[in-house]
Structures are given as C-alpha cells and as structure tokens.
Image 1: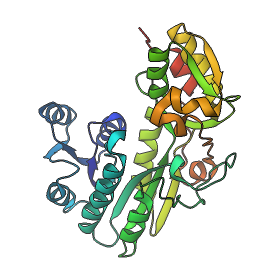
Image 2: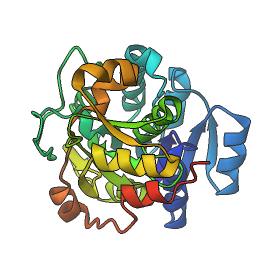
Image 3: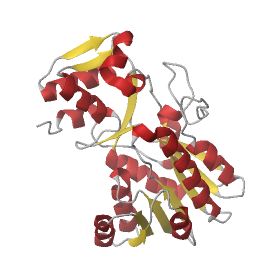
Image 4: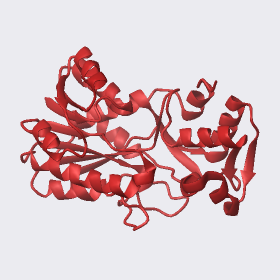
Length: 295
C-alpha cells in the first residue's frame, strides 16, 4: 500500500514508518525540517516537505495515496485551543483527498472519551463533547467517513519508552522543580498505558486490516497505572519524596496541568486485541520509568 504519514519523524511516527517499510509498504512521510528529510531518506521513505498548518502541503501529500495515517499534533499546551482547531482543519484537508474505499487513520486519545471517573473506557464509548476540551479529532474523522472513506480511530493512552511517556514527563518536570513527586489525594486515579513499539505495530495492523465504516481501536496494554505508583517511581528516580497533596493544593502545585494530574483514565483494549490480533509484549510503564535516566 501507498501510505502517507504525518508526524512521520515524531515519537510514534518514527517507529511506524520503519515497520511499514519493513513489511513492504511504500511510505511518504511529512516533515518540515532538514533533519527530518535525512531521517526519512535513511529508512527508505519518500520525503514530503510541509507543515501541519500548511493545508496545501497536506493535500498534495495525501493525493494518490491508498491510506493516510495522521499522527501529527502540536503539544504546545499554551495554545491548546488553537492546536485543536489546526488539527480539525488538517483532518478535513487530508480527508478531502481520499477517494471512497481508501483508508484514513486518525489519532485520538482515551482521555478524549466520555466516561465518569472510574469508568473503564472501551472502543464503544463516544468521544467527549465538552467546551473544556476543544480537541475533536473523532468528530472530524466521522465527517470524512460519510463520503465512503474507511476510517480507523486510534485512541492513545500514555505511550512510553525510557525517553518519553505521554503526559508523565510533565509530572517528572514538576517534581524536579518542586523537590517532591506529588499525587492528588490517595493517588488512586489511573492512566492507561502502552509501550511505543507495540503502539506503532497497532497502527500498522490498523492500516492493513480496517474495513468500511468507522472503526475505533484502543491502543492499551495496561488498563490503568495509579498516579501514586507513577509518582513514587519518579520520586525514586529523582531521589525526592513522593507526597500526597489535596485537590485544593493541586492548582498551585501543578499549575495548568492540575486537571490532568487528577484525571482517572483507565481503558480496555479487549475488543481491539481480538479485532487486530494485537498482543502487546513490551515493558510496562513503571518498568520504563524505573529504567529511565533521570540524571
């Protein structure tokens, strides 16, 4: 298959591009940097210069492709609402170039799924619809499916290796700055997680196996790792104490990240594993955090 990948030189994209090429797919990767050009050339991918906000570059990149995998998203949280709007426009631009029967793989997150605290998110749960959360990748993708494009939505948890771990590095950064590794209340809120290479493999399976309509996959290995265990592991790595703080103290301690620090986001991948034959085998989140180089 001919596959266009946005975010092709990013955390997940780097692994996905290599795996797609290794099994015989032809990959065109989006990059905006000279370093990205060299990285893509080194693994045998076609280079496409462009940017997430350059909609013409997205359209020309997607033109003629059998599948588009959209991984790119700006994680500058100071411009979160603008980034969400840019994401919506990017999905619309990419989808506009796909003919009926072609495939569009769009990235979402288990944290963007509706559910009360304690609810284990499944693939059947609807995306959240709240003014407080401006990201709407799934809603944008649903619109593309209306014209006969096959759509796969991959909901990500905390994707990790020993370098990066989704939102967890923000906890690590705060612990460095504050001298304590904090969790809110009893730290019982949980974050689903999955290893980087297993997540890249899931994307490849989604490219190869997704049929008509809209299919949702949860890229989850661990249903939920507690905030307390994460904080204690970070504390051990940084040689600082792990401490509980009250919900009232969270805003002062974590700043804008306080809302996320207290979120309970467990998720199941039971259906996804059966549908794709996906069995993650990589290390758990705590193992990667334990083996991370903190100094």
